[in-house]
Image 1: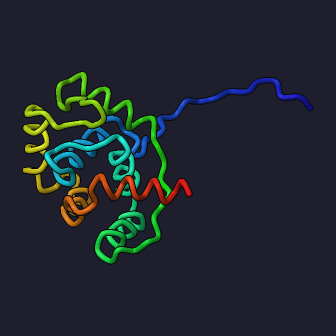
Image 2: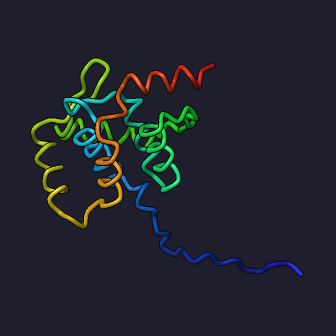
Length: 150
């Protein structure tokens, strides 16, 4: 018995918020504002924080690294969507691209200020970044990479 007719009905597929471009852009701005010295960060640090911020287990792992000096450094992913979000933020004048860093602009600072003023927006992300603060700096990111490359 052969199939005479096959019909597909397109149904909307929900997109997980962490994959939405606007979410990625806001996370980048939050990282620059809350957890980066002089509102400036390397691409690698942005990727690392973006990866660690995604779920509770990873957040706890980074808190352990920062507070306890836990030597178990995690492996993390480099996400093309984060690079695309950075390009968009740069083209909109929300961040500046320096030689090897990205810096929050005044315009980006104003936008992130509005987000920080909304107590319901990005609660988990902001709470986590405030807890880490500026304790996980570029030097620690470099140490992480050196450790992973061995």
